[in-house]
Image (cartoon, rainbow, N blue to C red):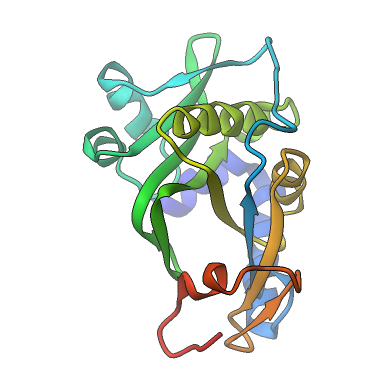
Length: 214
């Protein structure tokens, strides 16, 4: 049923792309790498797209969100009820077409990778998802910008995220908003590669993957 749902949402092109990612991961290709990014200049390079309807998810949106939700490990209810957590949604013609989650402080569990330790004034942005038919319209950038507004208002001074290196559109979107990669993790090599020599050591030490040392 999950495979059918994915095919229905992503289409043949999306299924082929995901299949190639999995094959690449086995072969040690790009899809086996996770890029960790950070943004400290939260007031810069923000998206201002008046054509995109974004808002913070509330309980009245929950049922529709759970129907739309693409990632089985994400619980909309948990993001509503956990202090410092939230979800930004985008609507088109009244229907949810995308969402971005965020978490402030605490130990962030990165699905399929490991954990990332956040300080009380740090936030994690993601996961993000946009319906296949609504991509390329600046929706992801608008939702991330709104999420940054939300966490900035709660005293956050820097944001982190992690993106599969094969996901070029998402990487490009985050880079345009001021996020910069600081370390790369290869699941094929079970190792890390620092992207920027000026990266603070404490950022690197935030990442924990069982059986792997930075």
